Image 1 (cartoon, rainbow, N blue to C red):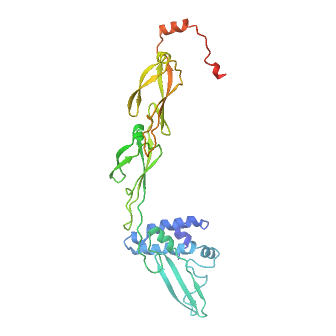
Image 2: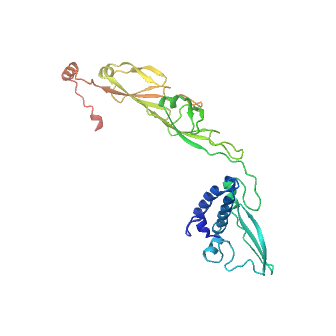
Image 3: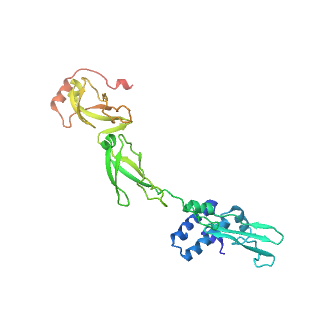
Length: 313
């Protein structure tokens, strides 16, 4: 037998987790079932299992490191052809090596450790012990994908047809009010299962594109609305675009920048028995982009004295 550390490709200082990980990787790669019963794969797999039988067992590993046993698990200096020994290989299977040695005085030394449970976990059955176990059904792997949708689509919900990595087209439903970063599960649309197990799922992480004028605050929406100086002073009616179409908003006379107006029920639509959110509009008084002589003349002749910064002191 070769050095078990060398067989598993790990150092003598490797942790138990690293040794287990190395065994899992090699066992999956060289398992006879994945090589159509190839004899060389069978031999390599048995070598890997035997190596893990030594260094995967805490007690045996300590004895091997201290030189008490060899790479086959036998005591150093032990000769199985000795006339004082009568024994037989008890079992040797895909999952490990078990030897029961019986001496003339009746003493029994047993190497009972097997990586059977670990192999059962990897392959759904079929450990050691001299017999193959029936493989258990295993669910297929989940597939994680990302999907970017429009702001309006996230608010109102809808349906999409997406193309999976394997080329399949799947129709999916976008829930009303889905949030940025929320995950949608498409059950049974992932990788196929093993041994008649169920298929995995597709996990879609939603990214919601930004809206040019609206932001979301829970189920409410917020936006800034530019208004003219005349609309702010005298009041008036303006059209406002909402998720469900334009509506008329009444601006009270004497409205300052920062004045907040509410359009009830014009936020995220209702779902799950909850009330719809509101749309909150913050007025922003805006002067003309180009100089206006009449406005300049009016401001120069306006004698009302007031200090808008007094509230900040």
